[in-house]
Image 1 (cartoon, rainbow over the protein chains, first blue to last red):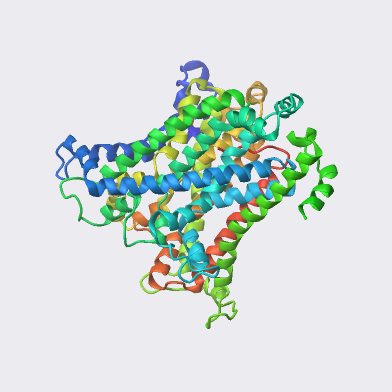
Image 2: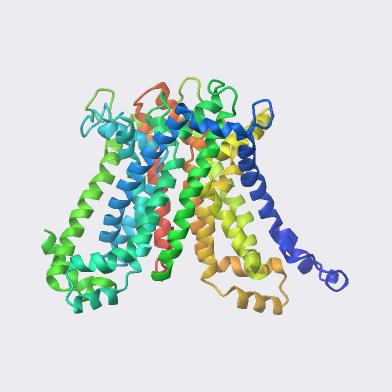
Length: 288
Length: 288
């Protein structure tokens, strides 16, 4: 499509002299149109629907439904789960990333862990819930965890399975960016390993670490498949309730509940990602 | 064990990176730490997968071994849901279509922007990374109405590719941007243009072949994303592989075929990413 738009001058050079060229940005129109239709438009629909009644009249008072204890419960559930899995995932992921990064940069272990992380970070989905079900679930081979179906703990553990690899992927560049000279300098000045991490390495990595943790938080916020396969009877988190609201009419009858919940979700993710972007900018200043 | 391996490893694989200047004692402690970490995390990542593998090889009686679940992949048919094989087919077709559309949409646009419309670079980047901020489930809420209307014409699940392209944008964009950054676009295009090439030739036959590593990365990431997608298909009532697995698990908990199919899909994704990692050898990949 873009190709067609951009070929004109080449295929028919006779035009070139006679007619003014189309502005160059015309070549990007197909892409912009596609994104507008399938990304911006649906998002716009969600925002508008959230502020309307089912009968189509504007109702800005819908926002007050965020105070509804039922609705608030889903957001609190989402928050708990994301906090737990992001905290565990980022700490453990950072440790693993450091262990991997301190080895041979072209070695087998690094290559293996990076590709495995690439796969496992994407390995959310229903499959992951199956894998844990047969490991520690009621039919588990390893042991039968009595807390497997407890809300933040069981599913939180399952979430760390894709959160840790994601942290490895996003944190690795930061660790690679630590310069040898900084360590050598601090050792020459007589610092211990603890002092190096406390006063040099730690502060340098802190923005990247927090940024990674926030990315994990946002990642868990929108995850839906795994928790749906884990437990589909009770809605604990926002995406589950969106799914319920979409497939049934029960719920807040005066509000487009799915849209309202979706709007809340977008706001939450947007806040987190904004902080993430600010932290990344700060980190980028050092780790070049 | 750790000490032995570390002695063996240090001289051969002395990393080009940071720890070269480290004192021997510190180096040994670091290696012990690394191997402990690798063992623990390796176990955490492997055990659920092995449990899944074991369950896929479970015979009719508990504790026996059989390949029947693997043979069932080709023939499994749950009651009230489409046959497993058909949904595997659809998912693979979806993956191919999504990759093709993504390439046609994104590659020419990115090259064109780089060449002629520099001032749009930032806009395109923001638009491409936006799907990270807007969870898939929100898009579904917005698109649900539109898709439901289209569904009256009983279109196949292949129509999902319209949204999947959007989901793939952030990953594809980053891969392609890395590929594009590695070549001197300006010189190449000036050379080609001065030899009389049309813009079409410049983009398709000169620049695109030079960024094939980036294109390969983008394709593989998109492919594995489509293989694992659940949320959108499930909520729009289409059946792809993950939705099929979910339905099977609702009908027949712990059906062996669940685990064999999941494991096969995972191996497939892993093989793809391994190809990526080896094809990209010698060049540093950066994600996140």
